[in-house]
Every structure is written in C-alpha cells, then in structure tokens.
Image 1 (cartoon, rainbow, N blue to C red):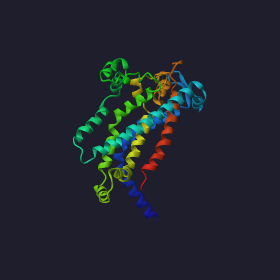
Image 2 (spheres, rainbow, N blue to C red):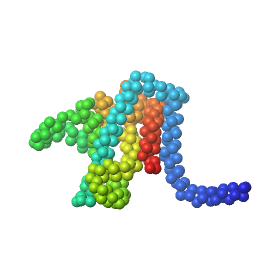
Image 3 (cartoon, rainbow, N blue to C red):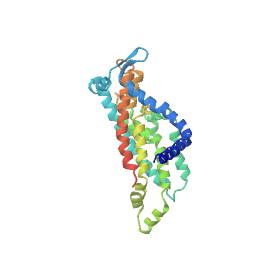
Length: 309
C-alpha cells in the first residue's frame, strides 16, 4: 500500500513539475492584478479615512451607512436601478439583435458577408470617448436640428440627453450600438460550429426557417448565449466611460443616468457633493456589494447554460 502511494505521489509530483512552469506566469499575473486588488478592496471597505491622514477600522459601518444614511441610500438606490435598466436594454437590444444579425450573416444566400461583418464590428474598435462625444453632438437639437428639418424629421430634434426620461435610454442605445459587434461575432462563431447534418435532417422533415432557429440553432448556441449574457452583465455593472463621455460623472440630468460605476467614482475617487472629499472605504464598500451582486447573477447563469445536456 505504501509503495503504491509513493508511486502515485511521485507521478503527481512529476505532473505538477511539468505544467507548473507554464501556469506560473498566468497565475502570478492573476494574483497581482486580480486576486490581490479584490482582497485589498474587501479589506479597505472595513476602514474609513485616507492613506495620507490615517485609516480607522470601522468594521461593517460603511455598509450600514450605505443602506441607512439618506445621503448614500438615495444615490445608491438610484444608481443600482439605473444600472439594472442599462443592463436589460443591452440584454434585449444588443444581444437580441446580435443573434438576429448572426443568423443573417451565417445564411448561405447572403452576399457581401465580409462587408456587413466589418460594418458591424467597426464601432467596437473606436474609443468610447470619441463615439460618446460624436453621439452627444448628433443628439443635440441645436446641432442636428436644421439637418433633420431638411429631411422632414424635425420631430426627432429634441433634447434626448437633457430629458431625464430619455437620457438613460439614449445612452444605453448608444452603448448597444458600439458594442454590438462582440456578441454578433460570438454568435456567428457558435452558429458556424453547428453541424450541417442537423439542418439537412430538419429540411427533410420540412422544417421552416423559424423552426430551424427555435428548435435547432437557439438550443445549440445556449452556452454561448449564456456567456454573452454574463459578459453583458459584468460589463454593464462596471460601465462608466459611456456616461462620462455623453453626460458627466454626476449622471446628468439630475442623476438620471447615474450608474454604479459613476457613483463609485464620485464617492471613492473624486469626492461626492456636497462634501467633495473622497471616501475610499465607502467606495470599496460599493465595489464589494457590486462584486456580490455579480456573483449572485453569474453563478446561476453559468450553472443553467454551461451544464452538460
């Protein structure tokens, strides 16, 4: 028995010695740039004060303040609700159209396929600050109003970004437009990976294009759809640059476009009005709760979409 254990241990040690040198660089990178900042953020959420003036351990006081002090409750509740709306718009518009475009791009009768793929993916390559500023001009009635009037579309010349009821939707749709190319390419790859045998068998049975999509294509790309949904969820709960470029860090107008990312920036880095002094501990508390929310959303989605059928 002891001899067998030693042989297995030696074999396992040999295996570890073989793959550890290849894994070590990625492991070190992950620990330094991912794991350690996460643990440091969790530790920072238990303190108040700044590094230069000294920090004081307060335990869970930052979390209690976030959900009891009106100054934080109102802003956090609004930012969280806006982030959920931001995410659902992306989930429906960006990912829904992404599947639709991918189905069209993988159709055998489509001409100029490469051209359409390039046009869909070009916005992804542009800087968010550039596209945000350009769309800010396009949505400005003073700047684009005369042009729309010539096209008899004057009813579209309205302050989309200045109206608190349309600002968040406008920013969300611009973000969907820019990042549409990523889910489209992922869905295209998934659809092209489906064997033609399924489609041939369905054609023999007289299946319509709609039945092919709902009964064959959509079920077979479920793992990819789940991964796209997870990436959308994580990215939207960390969104900041699109609001910064089109509105400002206060989520104008009147905090109508305030997201978790902009709230975290104001509280933990820039300092929130009226105090104007950064509170890294409170910012870390917001980041910690966001991390827990992401876990609650990502883990069930992974189990539902990535499991073996």
